[in-house]
Image 1: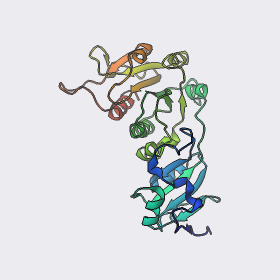
Image 2: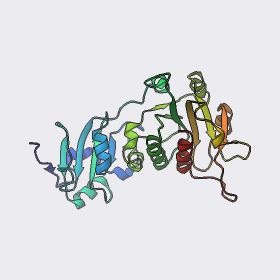
Image 3: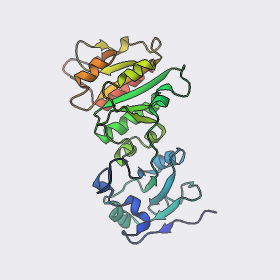
Image 4: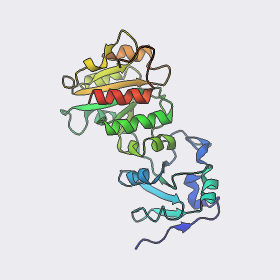
Length: 269
């Protein structure tokens, strides 16, 4: 029988250091971006973490929430009342439980492009300068739901394993392999060499209708998405094979990037 979670009464207890001052941003002072533990909020997301390849370090929550989880042996489990919990993390947590996990390195780019079967159909999402973690999390959630099998990020993108991205994705981002394309946008040539049709999403009136891109004729497709507001740069659009738009009612200039991503993923599924 698994022992009961240890009770935390001191917000400065070193055992819960992974969870301290989470509102401070996506990295601790003096540490490099993308080097801290992965932080996951809420029971459904923590359960997805437990089913993922990420090694769980610790779980912290209000009484009852942690004990209800089926934690593997070796995972440190702590509980605290909501006031102590709020003091530890720096804000009022409504989801009742958090977990920390060791980071995994990004996927090997060539392996991500090839997939488990290099001859099989494959869908990827390619993000340029998407520096809003919550938009990134929403895109990741739609990607998992709608058959996209990986993310490619340019060097300016937000950290997909930052707490807010993981939270908005409901933990689904943990099931989505990702890699960084360091040469941008020149690195898109690697996708073309691997057999992908690259589709740059833009509201420009001279772009083709997204529905005219036949997913059957192009079994390997990568959808390019830019940051909220500026969208894809002209250089990225020029490097893509196709520029495509989502037809919209007159007077609406564009969808938000997360909504546009979901429409594109569903259309090209």
